[in-house]
Length: 143
Image (cartoon, rainbow, N blue to C red; front, top):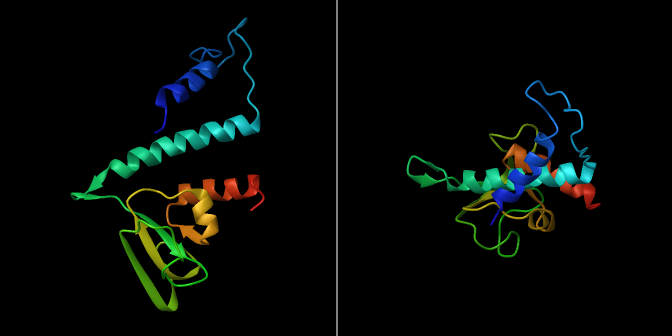
């Protein structure tokens, strides 16, 4: 579970340095963040948003998280357990919401799956925000 209070504390730590006009308040403690700390904060905020987003329902149905198959069609062992729906495409097709990429099909999940699983099973997230953070994770972890 995401600790929202911890995220709020981190943001307030930076906000205390600024007045209403975004000027640094004289004598305020200097808070510097490394790129890694900023990336971690953004990740935590994104996780929190995705957590909330997964609880939002559309027309009475829970929002699903779709992952496309890059190198093989869905079959036993080709994706993490827990998919609520899946579809194989033969021949491979362009996904309607991803430009310029062909896929072998997709699997839908009630909750987002982890970056390690996306990488391990060679999946492609439908959600652009998740894709952006997944690519940053891959770069940071040399994957």
